[in-house]
Length: 381
Ligand code: PLP
Image 1 (cartoon, rainbow, N blue to C red):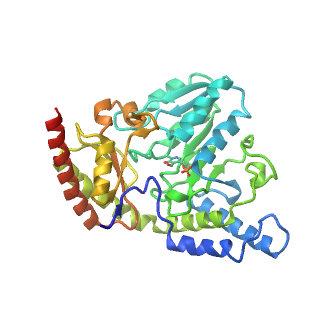
Image 2: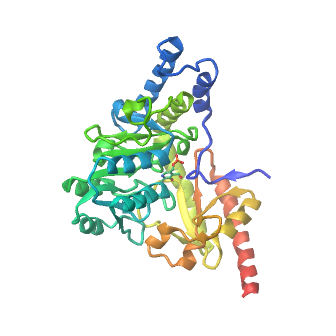
């Protein structure tokens, strides 16, 4: 049985051209980018080229790109780095942030910060009225993601940034799930900082960037030899950075061809889903083109993911798993979805190699699986 991968918001395969760009830096061009000799100079050149490629994807300046180990580090670097420079005040983050924003924000409570969760509406969009309400309190940091990893819903980050700037708060957006899927313009979004990750755009795992408005200064999360303008010490991951740069360039090149192809498959899927009784989340509002998030009442998302995996398809559940419990998705709860329905949430996220034929076959497998699970739950009741 061939396995079909429908989980591109979790991670993507490395593009062949990305791998080809990386290989020389794992083999013969293994220099340390800080070295003065030829090996070092070649590595430095490659890192600088990647900086240009990453900057171009989000229409920023190369000097604004700080390479990190990925989205998690970039989000931590901004939140902790900003808190290290500002007087404790309020930090406002949306109620649907990825844990690598939500947790560092929460941790600031220990050093005197007040953590304010910004509400979302039933479609999963930030409630701008609640943002205005929240910002009546003195606020130092605001972080709102550009696209949600579960629902795919796109947020009006520019509108939030306008309000944040009006109260002189530092504005950050996690653009990990938006990059390569929608056009991004760092300046038009009016943010101070933006997080990117390579492995969501057909690049390697363990590399990403924080794109930063140089008018703000962060306390470095990792200090040492002063790499990355003193903001992120550590010998540069040259092959990873080169791969990230190549992935950014490819993402920019293929976006206009890819986005309509992905949204056509997503719409094809959702037409079928409605026919088999799914509730679809966030479908009434603007989303990144590849993501569909849905539930079948009475069927556990985890169970569905396991059964669908046995049938040859990799999809994700919306539940946050820990070793001891399975909690329904915080994003869906914030949207006002009942916990029983939220427990059923599963996500399909398409990628560049998926084909409409796979969607058609998936729908018939899903329909049969759902019918079988419904019979089983009916017997159990
Ligand atoms: N932010 C969002 C919205 C994500 O979906 C993810 C990955 O799941 C991350 C951040 C973390 O990025 P990384 O895996 O590069 O640490």
